[in-house]
Image (cartoon, rainbow, N blue to C red):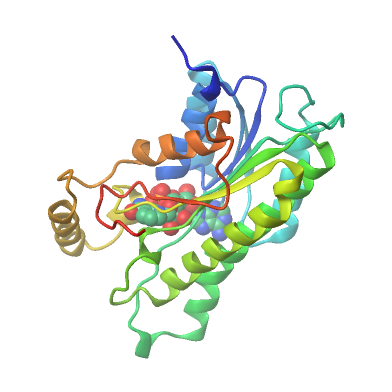
Length: 270
Ligand code: NAI
């Protein structure tokens, strides 16, 4: 029997980074749970592939080719997604005609360089995509949710990098630490509108992002992470998609301002 608190029938979700890895797995799972999923990514080919996979499984999907670091593009796409939906099954009290129930701001890039070799342009690029891209998506989503008065759930993608230091992690870790601060701050500001905001901080997940590292370094990191995990393995995109589903659904209705850490137990902060 399906659990009602995980049923997203009638809900509208917007997922950035939906063309690949964690974003694609999350878009597919939210659709499987019943949501209409608006998929956004800059990789047009793989983006349309995700939308086609959702439709082939009987779900409803729309695709937006965009750069999350471009505020205007995000604003336009989120407004379009919200306008396409109607109110009815949310957690708030509004009666507007547009609605957005779920934002999963997942798009991001990896960058690794030692502190002493880090160039300003690398830092800017990583912050533009990983932090400002998430900020713009959160702003657009929160505005749409407040306007509709239907409440909602915003999910950001942080990283296990916020729990540990590590050589080369300056730009990436700083961008993810900023995402955590954004998540907590926004949660306090939009809670009165029945909007929840939470971050997911995954451990090492096997995706095209981690596979892009040179294969020797990747094999080494996988080996280390596997050894560090009490579960004895690294993660798969579906492990994170299920965390996203939990935070998106009514099942987590009393959870806000939190960091959920599907990391195989590699780090166990208080
Ligand atoms: P991925 O590389 O498989 O997917 C990232 C997606 O984001 C791609 O489809 C890419 O085209 C899109 N994207 C990147 N920059 C964009 C931009 N400016 N505009 C629009 N789309 C853009 O990577 P993965 O592993 O699925 O990562 C997803 C998120 O999870 C990222 O935020 C990443 O930092 C985070 N994460 C990943 C971990 C891992 O071990 N794979 C661990 C912790 C966090």
